Each structure stands twice: as C-alpha cells, then as structure tokens.
Length: 143
Image (tube, rainbow, N blue to C red):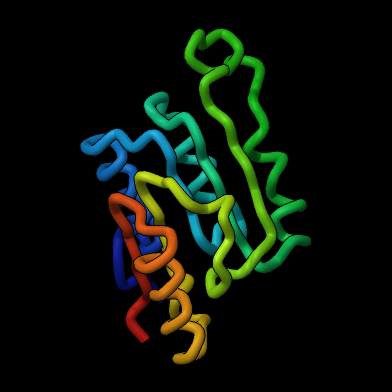
C-alpha cells in the first residue's frame, strides 16, 4: 500500500514547526508530549533556541530517547553550542507546572487525540490560561 501523503504527515507537521522557528526565532521552546523526542532532536540544531524543553507523561520513554539529544562531538566546534540548554520532564499536560511558564513557543504535535474530552479542556486551560506562551502550535491527525 502506498502512503497517502508524501512526505508523511508527521514529517510535514515537524517541518511546519521548523519553518515557524526559522521565521520567528523563539528563544524558549516547549514540546508537550515529546515522547520519542523526534521534534526536539530536529530543533536542537537551531542556534537561536536557548532553552528546549520536552514534557511527556511516559518517563520510561523519555529516558530511552534522551540520549539522542546529547551533544555530538561536532557540536563542541560550534561556539554558540553552549547557549543551548535541553531539559526533559515527566509530567502531564493537564497539570499546572511552574517550570513550563515563560516560553515563546509551545508545540503539541499529535498529542491531543490521546486525551479525553475532559483532559482536552484541562489542556486548554493549562496552555492558554496558565502557560500563556507567545505562540502555540497544535496538530492532530485526522481521526
């Protein structure tokens, strides 16, 4: 069976975020539901970002994937590398967490469809009422 979309939709969504980052140059980026850390791995190469944070409810998965965010040897050749800080937290997108405030951009890629309707309401309250970032990108596959 051939794919319906080329490139795959999740890649298109990640590219949308990357293009946004290139245009708007946020310094602090939070990825809610980071799970596999794929988007974080792509964003770590954007030198304008100073703080890159991922949050996921699955702490085991974060521990498995966090090593892919570690600096590689060539990163140390870049004089601006030391300005980037990456943090990963286990937590819920439905709970207020002071560590997640003050971000320029919050992303939530293919997460919201995993939430109950009650949790979607809490998610909205947390993101738009408590975190109040400058920009929010939310995407979900068509269900």
